[in-house]
Length: 58
Image (tube, rainbow, N blue to C red; front, top):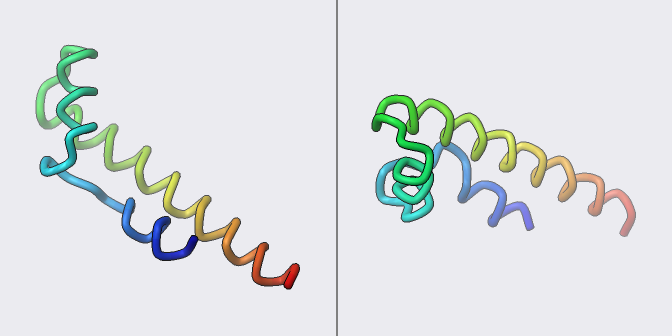
């Protein structure tokens, strides 16, 4: 779980989802980079938090 969460942090233009979001929302590469990176970082940190909580339960 922690590895999966860590793999998401600050993803970039190699990610297919990046280009899908860019095209669907008609954003520039810069705008997409800012919003995509923030969202992926939030998901990553939340995943780390859940992994830490799960480790306390075992």
